Image (tube, rainbow, N blue to C red; front, top):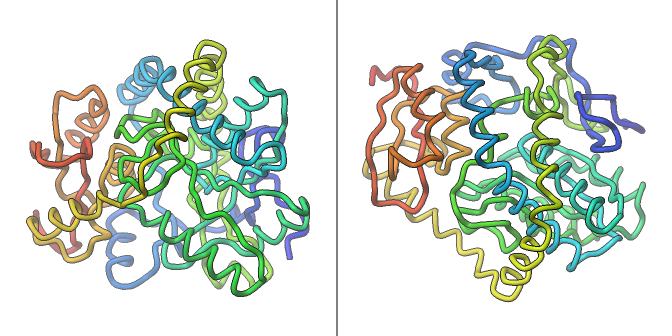
Length: 369
């Protein structure tokens, strides 16, 4: 068993402790095309890694512009979620972010609560993998380190809710196996899929960290669960891309958003109260839309339909995109997506009849268009 976590990532250990096995010495990457082919032939996506896409200078400029425009909105969503966590769970909370999109969000929540309430909550980042569950060794490590704690799971945003469903399943399984009840309510900044009751907004807006890969997530790869490298007592694995240190903007991103906290804390507290008074149901209402899109475009698997700004961005950054559906191609949230789609020669279709801002469709390998 990993008694302590490997030092992983470019974040300060005061911000987060990654409970992940360091696989930096292993070659796990393949080309997007080959990896997509393997996944569609039955290999689980968590066994390998995509080659990290390094965006051109023009795209990075767009990231900084996006951050400048949306840092306040991101801070407000962070504050609203943080206030709800604090009021519901208090100082006994341990923040557990889901690597890797959840990691910067978990750090921002930790920093907000430190600034506004003067508390330093423990924050760990662990792995959850669709169809494979959560890293139980990591959960046990946290519970042993913080007896009687209240775990709060954190992610960046919701798409169609696959991770929310996976988390609920994993918590149920953990209770059956170990007799420990875990709260499966997922805290996110944006919940356009209506997958949780703990969110900053249900608007499908652009969280700037969705624009980049590891260079905005502490230089940590996606998490890996590959039996040849991960033993039964190990944490799930990940790589640290030290060769990308010069391109790393992880800490600058955090500072840019956290600098907005003093200006938004009053508004965040009011927003949190409104949400807590009327959170609405976790109805997964986006799923009906996704199923309609799947049928309309004759898509074999629902896993090939990726709704929301964050998920669409990921399709373009690390999958084999087929088409991009856009509710409004003039929306300020999709400038970076338009640029990526142009660069990768992917068709953008105006598709006004959906609640998501956009939706990425993955190409079936072997198809020409």
